[in-house]
Amino acid sequence: MLRRSILTLSFVALGTLAARADLVNLIPGSTVKATSGVVRGTVTAESATEVTVRVGAANQVVPVSQIASIRYDGRTGTFDQAVSREAAGQFTEAADLYKKAATESASKPFIAADAQASYARVLGDQGMTDPSKLDAGIAALSTFIKSNAESRHLLPSLETLAKLQLQKGSYDDATATIDRLSKIPQSSDRAAVLRARVASRKGQHADAIREFDKLIAESADGSVKRRDAQLAKAESLVALKKYQDAETLVKGVIAAAPAEDIATQASAHNTLGDCLRAAGRPKDALFAYLHTDLLFFKDKEQHPKALSKIAQTYQELKRPDRAEEAIERLRQEYPKSPYTAALPPKAGS
Image (tube, rainbow, N blue to C red; front, side, top):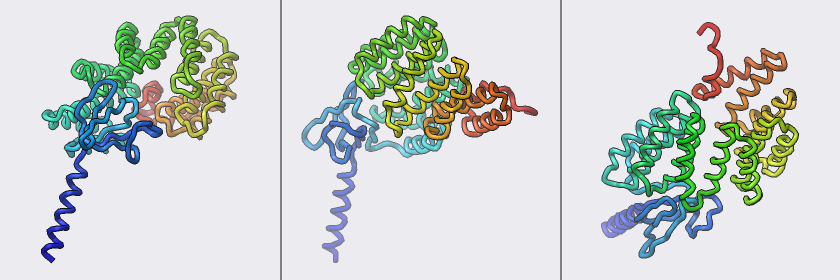
């Protein structure tokens, strides 16, 4: 009996030791050699483009572009709580917990950087949906980037910062951020789309369309780069009142994307609605927005936009009752959205 107990304890101890490892979770379809999509080992180095993991006696280099997430051994309970709060949509509390986790992990640089990046990312995401938090998001991301020039989080942080600066109308700052982004290997595509968007936002639509055409011509069918360039080009075509060209382009994106590609379908249907509405076809536009609302509502960036556009379109169609229904849903489901913030005050409030 004693011998069995000792053996049992030994196996438990060995299992615990085996479990103690950093888990590098790969994106679906990754070409990196791994078991069940996870590289298990010890992260020994990180850069903006790759992560080195010691697996047994050998080192395995994993491109950052192939990584979905990393769960470091020794991550604090506070970090886990932050992840849970973020998943539940409690973003303010999540940000506070990430900040605390970064301080707790000061002696573990990879974990600390992960917590700092998560803190900046949450504030950046809030800035994208809540105008009152735009400056805080820009400040958090700028601080992180300045202190983590070699981080694996550098590329997404720069991309989000550029989008926030663009949203704020700080075009010179956005251009400087995009210039830095373009110097990171394998990020030139994202930088090029953002650069063309700057021209579009500045009203330089002909220049923007030329840039988008270049991006479309050199990008693969079905790629995110091609989709983003096509939809952005459609927005510029609408600004130039080339409505039919814009409609044809967006419908091509919709037809080419699988129905389960929610991000593409939601964004494309909203863009189609904008095209049709600008062309003076509100009933057709409403149908496009309702596609996003009914079929692609899981996209939490595009769905509140669709509800806002549905309300506006119903107003144009002289259906204030249906418009109010959409407005009420927008208030209840997305209280912090910029589309909600743009609504007139509720009667009696």
